[in-house]
Every structure is written in C-alpha cells, then in structure tokens.
Image (cartoon, one colour):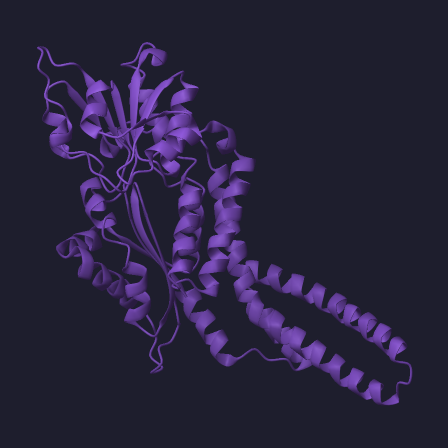
Length: 425
C-alpha cells in the first residue's frame, strides 16, 4: 500500500514549512526503522512543500491490518524527534492520501500542477532527486521505484501535451518578473547570487535571459571560484562586501542564511535601495533583514501571493488522472497475469522435459524450444492486455474468475482480500 502525507503552501504556513524542511534529512530512515511494516520511504522537502511517500505492508507481522492512520502516526512521530512541537502543528494542516489518490498526487506534483507557480520547471528534478537520496540511504523500495519512475514519465508526457514545456515557469522567473517593475535596465544592474547549486545555475540563466551581465556569486562552501569559472560570472569571497556592491541579491542555497550582520550599514541618507530575493526553503534570509533601511525583501510567501493562476485547463489534470489509473490497473492486474504466465510456462516446461527424452538432434531441439517459448509468449500476451483493460474498468475479479474457470489458475486469496480492502477504502 502506498501512502502520502503532504503539507504544502496551499494548506501550511511558509514559516512552518521553513522550520520543518531544515530537519528532514533523517526522516525517511527513521520511518523505515520505526516499523517492520514500512518497506520504504521517500521524503520530498522543496521550497513550498513537505511530503513523505511510504510503502507499507498491507498487514503487519502479527496479522493485524496496517491502517493509513497508523502510518500517519509513524510519520509525525519521526518528525517529532527532529522538529519537536512543529510536528504537531504540521499534522493539523497535512493531508493523508493513499492508493490511487497518493499516486495521482505524486504525478501532479512531479508535473508542476501543485506548485506555487503552476508548471514550474524545477519540481520534476526535485522529485527525482528525492528518490535518488532514498536510494543512497537505502530507504527506497521496488514499489516506490516504480511509482516515482512513472511520475517522471508522466511529467514528460504532460509537458509534451500541454504548453508547459515551452512556458519556462519557475519561481526564479516569477521573482525576476516582479523585480522587473523596479529595474529599467537589467544590463546596468549589479547582481549577487548566493549559492552554487543547480538552482543557482538556473537563476544565472534566467538573469542572462533578461540582459543581466554583471553577476557575482558567493559560496559558503568555497565553491565560488569553480562555479564562477564554469558559468563565466564573478567569484565573491566576502559576503558583506559583495552585498554592499550589489543592487539585487538572490539567495538559493541550503548552506547559508544571510543575517542582519551581513548587510552593510548605509552611511549616506537616504540609504541606497537594495532588493533581496530569498528563493530558499529553508529560509536563506533572516526576516529581520526586511526592516533594514533601503532593503526590500521578496520571499517565497510574497511570491506565492503573486503566482499566476493556472491557465492549463483540465487537459493536464486529466492526463495525470489517466496515468495514475493506468498505474493502479497494472498493479491490480499483475497477480492474475503472473499466475496465468506461470501456468502456461509450467505446462510448456513439462512438455519440453518430455520431448528432450525423445530428442536426438540438440540443435533442432534448441530451435524447437525457442519457437515454443515464443508461441507461449504470444498466447499469454492477449490475456495480459485484457487483464489490464479489465483492471482499468475495476473488473479484475472477472478476469481472475475466468482464468480459474478455464485453466484452473487461482490468485492467492490474500491478494484478493487486500485489493478488496483498497477498493473499499
């Protein structure tokens, strides 16, 4: 059973998401270690959401059912160990999804349909990096691998079928759109980027698309020189001095928080105007910076207020829902398909074993086996397709009854019971 505990900008305060996202590095491992029923966990903490995707056994080792509410308790217990009372607050705004709803939600998130800026470019990569982290920490599972890989494929299909692929939506582009009302000529603006990761590279590309050429970069980890050489920008090594020279500062890093002490005190009156754009979560800029003379702070909470409404229509959502239904249908049909294949190929192996006793020419026997195995595959293909079609129509039981009636093939009773429980949930 796949479950998702999700809290996002739609339901949760940005400040809470900020605090929680700082402490999620061990959450997936804690979840997997917390119960033998948890087969895997992937945690996605981005600039506007916290989500935990959990693969759990439908029944625990003692035979008791594993309920979604019990798994939700595990998630918040794991969070409580790292974020304390914030876990209780987050529980009040989080949503629990399971089965096809969880799958559909993941596909929508990966396609950018649940983002602050609908259709943003970065989210699909963030989803896949969450899976990569789970692999590295050995918290993934075969079920999570399949559903996250299908999410990536669905995201590409949505972008091909809608205008998402060419729209270039992202938080940084939205931020620069808002900044453009204050900037008459980007080529005359001195910009400082704090951070040297993937998002910083995206930010530099967006700045250059607007004509900005005077771009410096600061890294708290000493990567400024390497990053600057790669992207043909200026390396900065002293943050306060670099901020003093900049008209616009963009922060996109998980390694550093710009503090009030980093902002130089203006000696002249009035203080020079400086726009600081915080694109990070956890927060990259202390809230107190906004109160400094001459400073205007644009953060994620303000960006969310200006995010454009979705103009995608129902098409993208229909694609996502269809992909989720197909994924669930394949999973529902799999036990019957596997049972039927095992029946056909077991019968084939028995016949081949008898024929080997009578065979004399090894080469002829090999060709015969190859031909018969191909024939068996062809015979299995048609019923397998029909099984998936029946599953999409919620008629899996009819297919399984048919193969039992005709071939005497039965699907394990516990598989049927679990599927019935999911359908009724």
